[in-house]
Length: 267
Image (tube, rainbow, N blue to C red; front, side, top):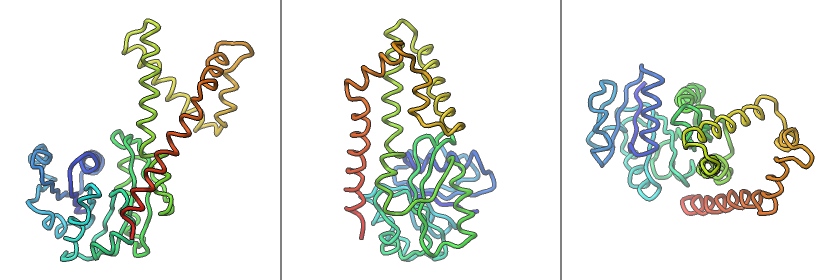
């Protein structure tokens, strides 16, 4: 399979690293206007560093345009003269829906996606939406590519702003919580490394428990909470200071901002 990646910034580099690690049979065509970003791939025989976007577009069966929304139209319009109109486009461009990409690029086989940061370690969740022109073979190719990032699931196009908040931005909020817990451990006298070890394992174990058992988080919380004990004291403090409301508000505020992006770029 010949896979093209336009832009080797955070998302493009993520795709290329994971694909090179997971599937050694593919060949890759990449382009980025900042030559420094492609420099590390010159020595990999599986990767061809192209001089133009058109070189990538014309040589690839699957193309992943990893460009910022403000530059997207200038890149997508170059597909109009493509020699391969049957190529599959897998687009992580924020705010650009299937109709918009079709209109600008003149291409028909479109998958819009939203990966998240845990994909760097193969534990991501990628949300995707398909154009009507995607056939069974295209779907299998797409699933194989997305599986290199972790799990994936199909959504309705109108839900992209919501999953941007719940899956795309949410890791940053979780990192803030993790950092705060580690700092608390340091305050209690542990080293950074020891505190990080305890906090991370507790969070990973708690998430796995909920996932494996299907237990409601509220019920799981109650199993740890004893009458007049230490846990209820901490929960009381959290509730009194509005932690639950703060988390809800952070996600809803992110969702509202994401809707602005999708409203800006939709046709």
